[in-house]
Structure formats: C-alpha cells, structure tokens
Image (cartoon, rainbow, N blue to C red):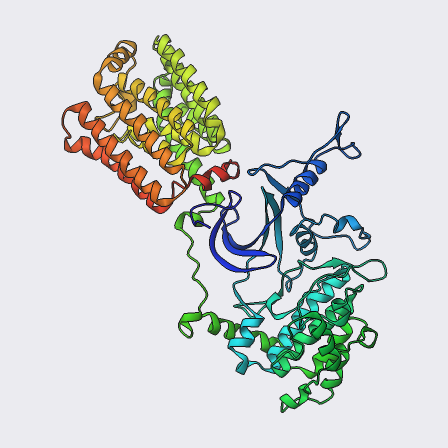
Length: 629
C-alpha cells in the first residue's frame, strides 16, 4: 500500500504488521485524531459486500419501514467508492439480553468489531471503528506498540520468570473475565493474540472467532487454533466459558514448561493428543514453586470440561497464589519488550521505525487555528484599507476603524469565509462612496460568486481568496496561484486564481499594488479618485495578461500534479509552477530584475518547500475541511 495514499481518506499507512487467513493488519497514522492505529483489512466476496451495503441502507430507513421500493423488493448494490460506516456501541447494558441480531450479520470483521467494541478494558485491545468500502472491510483498532507473546517466548525464553508468568496470566484471565461477564466467548486465546507493549501492559486482541453465549452460557461452535482448543471445540460442540479456560491453561502451561504438548498437524490427532499426552509436571521446571500448582493446571486442562473450574475467575483465584508478583512481572516485561524490539540489542529483528511526516503531526485544532490566523491577516490588511476609504468612518477617530476591524475579526474567527465576504463587501462600499459604481458592482458579483462556489467549502479556500491582496500588499502577490494550486482541488484552484487576478487588477488600478512591482503599501494614503479609468488601463496592459496567464497555467500544473497524491508529483508540480511564474514575470517586464525576481521566486520557493514537507497533501486536507470548520 503506497505511503502517499490514505486509507478511507483518513489513515496514512505506515507498515504491514502481519497477515493471516482473516486479513492483513497495517500500522497507520490517523490524520484526524493524530495517533497510530492498527487497521485489519479483510477482503469480502461480492455477496458479503452487497450484504454490508444492504444493512447500511436498511439501517437508514425509518423504524418499521418496509424494505422495498414500490412493488419491487430492494436489490442490494454497492459501489467501489461507497463507504459504509457502522456505529459501534460504547458499552452494553447488563440488563440487555443478547439476541441473534448481535452476531447474525456474518460479515467478516463486523462481528469482531461489535464484540470488541463493547468490551472496554485496559487488557483488551480497543476497537475504534468498522467500515466497508467496495469489497474491503476495514477494522480500525488501537495500535499496541510492542510484540506478541509468541515472539517474547521465542526470543526471550531464558528470561521468563514466575513474575512474568503472573503478569501475563493475570492480564489475560482478567480480560476473559470481562468478556464472559458480557456473555462473550473469545475462542482463540493463544500467544499470537496476546500483545505486550513497551510499558509491560498485556492486552488480548483478535475477537474474530468470538461468539455470544445464550442464556445458558453456551455459544456456537467455531474454528480455533490447534494446541489451544479443547476437545469440545475440536468436535464442534456448544462452547462455554470453560473453553476459554482450557485455552488459557494451555497458554499458561506453555509459559511454565517451555513447550506446548498439544501441537499437531490435524484436528483428529489434536483430540487424541489431548486425551493421551504425557504432561510434564510444571513444578519440576521451577525450583521455588509449590507442587500443588500441578493439580490446578491439570484440572483446567482436563479433557472433560465438567471436571474443570466452573469459571476463569475461579481458575485464576486458585493459580495466582503459586505464581510470582504481577507488578514486578510487568516491569520485567517492559524491559524485555524494549530489548527484543530495540535496534541496539537485536538490529536484524527490530521493529520497523515509525516515521510520521511533519505535516501529519499538525492536529486539526492547530490546522484550524492557522487557517483562521491567515484569514485574520488578510481581513485585517484589506479591511483597514476599505474602512480608511469610507468617508463616514474616515472622518472619525481612528478607533472607529479598529471597532469595524474587530467586528470583521470576530466574524472571521467564527467562520473565515463569512469574514472574507464581509471584507470584500466593505471594499465595495468604499468604491460606492468614491462613485466607482461599475467596479463596485463587479467586485460584489465576483466576491459573491467566489464565496458561493469556493470559499464556503472550507477554511483553506477562504484564506486563498485573501492571499492576493494580503501578500500583494508587500509585493508577493504570486503567492496566490502557488497556494491555490498546492492546496485546492483543480476547479476550486482555478476559480480562486481567477478571483485573485481580478482582485490584483483592481488593487493595482488604484495604486495599492502592482501584480509585478515590489512595493510596500500605506493604505491610508491611497485614493479611488480615478479607479475606473485606471482599471481600464491595467486591463489593457499586456503585462497584466502575461502575469495572469502565468498564474492560471501555474495553478493548473500544480493542482493537477497534486491530484496524484504523491510527494514526488507534488514537488515536480511545484517546480514547474515556479518556472511558469518566472517566465510570465519575464515576459511581462521584458527583463527579470532583482526586485521582480525576488517578488516571484520567493512565493515559488515557498511552494516547492511546502510540497517537499507534505503541505500539499490533497487527501489530508480534503478529508479534514469539515474538521477545521
């Protein structure tokens, strides 16, 4: 999976954590919440995908509504780009009776999501969300930065102590107790499904085989893993909490003795091996352990479940006194996990380093604050100029201008696109007072069109529409096409650049700035006296069209390159856009003077730098506009 492409327009894939029969697990970065997550991707067949979309459509109907269209029954359909989201319950009331609907969906991954989402516990991996897009199901889970118990036993077996066994056993047994209280059977407890993070915390994962117990405590039979599944699970009988107890006992025996005696090639051999295996006494493997532990472990491993402990809790109460200190075990686990996955001690087997691009670490709140700050700057510059040229305000004390600017600032902080529109309307009012009626009407029409079709879409669009007068006030108006091309979809980018050209022509006509001259402005000294005549002059100037044409072409190239969603294309597009802007400036003036070069090259260089840093990540910003609103 390419690094540049987001999963579900939100999650940045980093690495593949593992693959198996039930799906592939990816480590990813949640660009909205700013955290690492684990994403299990499960391929569905056409029937499963159609059923997922069918359920989503059915859930959208009013309660009790017949699921049909006219006299025709509804035919479930799905589209490759359609995303189906399932809202997962935070918890389930203890009084709620589980019904078959909880697990009747039969959509791979959905049952696991529903099951795990209701089990909130520090020893159970949290499930955040479940979505289906096309024929792929995505299970979004908590990312546990650490290793599996399988890897720990394989690579650090000599460091396993009774304290470590106690830490793992107490965590897994507690997780099972929580599940069983919620009438959930895990049915696949094994070292691969026990994760240990760098703090030594143990978590149970993969509820893909889990089932709900009925009123009598029995659940449907399902698959499992040879070596960790008791005879009743092998024989596909009804299962209960004692099934998970046997699996936990098998896992614990493996930690105590150093091997699993029930591993074999097929189910028939596995059932026979459980009945006939000659088990090593766990007490013989430790110098300082009470021999009475053997009876506890063997009772939990009894082939006849009626002979086992009635619950995992009772098994835990009997076994834990023979083990070590769980708190000390967690400290030892933390040390071992860091050693196993650390590069210095074992570089060839180290975990892949997680590199998160700088821009991915910019949270939505920070992005929203930056967007509003940029909009405030543009509104402040343009608003000051507008109010300074409205006679009723101009003739009063200066603090009236600040009050007017304060009103615009508040509007901008609440909704940047509202502040931008009000600012341009204020500028049009100033033109009306200067009797530049035609220009004022044209500005109102252009500003309202830009606001309606572009600015309302998000904060970035609003900021782009203010860049031309704001940056142009200091001679850097070419920043407008650079930001438009790098940050906006193609249509929005082109419309915004056209609007920027119009605004630049307007401001150039009354002397506030030129599209090519590098001048610092003093707004209170500017005049609208000959604005309509001067605007015609600017409009007919060939330099205006060379500059405007280069802006549009640069925007087109940059935006199209960014549509590919890879950093390489972003950078190439920014470089080509920079060249186009420099050529346009040269053709407009006939020579590339130093001031002209600086005024054009600096915004272009900012575009290249932004592309290299990932600022032009179209998928990132496109998926987050609603978040920054």
